[in-house]
Length: 397
Image (tube, rainbow, N blue to C red; front, side, top):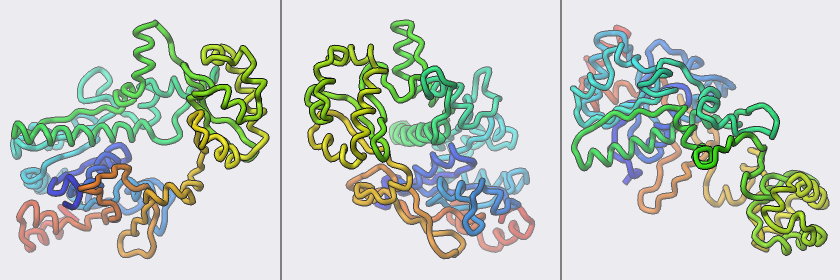
């Protein structure tokens, strides 16, 4: 098989990041994902910069492996084309504000009449129902409203957005998971269904431990930097040339011996995990003093083989390009530039390592409207003269 989702057709109306990140997962798994755009869109309008040879790197990254068609959704003929495509699609995805597709005459109820087996997956800031449903949301808003931003940042400092677009991408992952679940359910029932995923709720799902602690103990979890509420030491510590993460110390005395700090092993303030939590400021100061004696590689070579704690080097993005483990796992792949442009860009490979039906990563982003004729022919059975007529009238590109 060309990926475990080979044969699954996805008609993709998503834009920006959250939705395209979801449908990229499906494309990586072998689904035929067809991205729908407007005919009049110019290349630089497809995404933010920086641009490489006129191509948006923001657009390039989450849209690899997809096909591209361009249809005027406001034209009556364009609406009819979408309905025809939906008849042979397995999945329709969109991340407009709730109600947008209904106003276009292309919402779930309409498309379900064309294809009762259709999975209609809608991603939005706050879901299709509820008092916030009409509000717009971007990544930072999702992190704020969903609770994760309140937990991120230094103790006593302001709430802080996570450095990657977690508000968008976690919701995208939930959308992809929900689609796969709905496809499995369809195998049993023969019926499609609607999937409603909200960015805010995806962030709430990540706060499960904080939520249960508030429920059980009336705790009010808040920011504590990289510290752990239940374990010490825990987090990144500076070395002589960088940073190293130390967590989950299992053998405190041996750990201290490897640091060359037997005095810490004998200090009653650090003797147990509870004592270390109660004296965490002193503990971290002592660890910083000890770890400053050597560089990151030296400490990694000492502590990792001893298996006394969880340990990791704090890699920069540049470090990942030279990491031998990343190379061995083939986690950076070259994706060719579109439009026949020379060169390629490196992107993360899929982290799903399937032994029998491996993922399919390596195809470029869709060219704007580059596959319109092919898709209309294969999915809707349209003939070349009819396609040419629609193109001449500006209904498609």
